[in-house]
Length: 469
Figure (cartoon, rainbow, N blue to C red):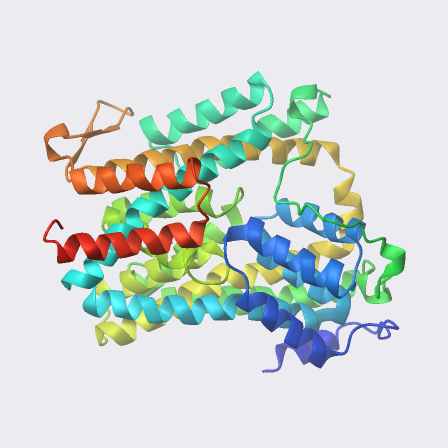
């Protein structure tokens, strides 16, 4: 089925004058995809440099307008921004091409690394490489806590929201979706009441441009293209197509295999994740780690760090780590298939149900973004969610630190109170020292993410060759 063609026929709008040729657009999006390392901040900066400053397809104001909308959505904002701009420039086909190309390099890389990990991860040199990566990833997550916190915790109310979220998830095992919902409700009503503490301002992953590019001086110009105006008939048609593409495989797996089958569990869990993943990849990983390790048993605690190390060192959204989780869940699950074949199918399924909704959010909502942009209560809800996310990411950092530095972690508590407490005698001194060295390199000497990951991986292999690990 040619989805792009089918959906394109849903609108009778004329092709807007002056859009970039589709073939050139594909080449530019492929270039952006190949350079999309470094998490959302780096990916958005690359898009801004190429699309605004170099190509001048659109201006500063329109770029930031699109970015503001994407930060309100669940899912990876950088990929959704690519879909949005692709859609602006080349209608539905452009959005599909931009979004798919943005994910493709990471999908291929993570799949190859997942196969390597599943088949050879227990071998000494490979295990040592991931041992080193864990130390670097722990520092990267701590950096994320500081980065997000510095731009969002600007008053005592936001600090209290972050603290409450941390206590809720760390001490009481509160579900991530419930924390996000509670923060959104608090922020929404705080914004409706006009409380200054809930007014979102600044922050985000917005680019810092060396030069300002006016919308009037770009290919797209200042006017809204015909195809970008609200069209209820088009929205219903494209929404129906994307809902079917997303949910039919989920329902089919549950009906044919049973809802307790690992493929059905993967489809349902990551579909649910796709609608609650506000706050960026690191907040999502806290939720995924909690469920994948403790509820489903797809991974062991340290393996979540291994997957994040893969995502940090490959192009594409950091949320691609979910592909590794789905791969390992199916690889180890009782599917009746060859484990490697099951793992590949699990990775493909996870990617499908994670990213298909991203197209739905953009194609349905982007034409109405002007009204959403001015909704102060919704922006206040986003500010509260971002504050709560700081607490969630802090929980992720603590959880990772416990399982990186200590070989044994016990769960203690009574009733709803549950705390992870390390066994001090089980400290892994090599891991502790390597993590401290990575922290010094990152915070004192400002070493970048990719060099830090590569250096720690090399250090892990060197420690193995020296007989330390």
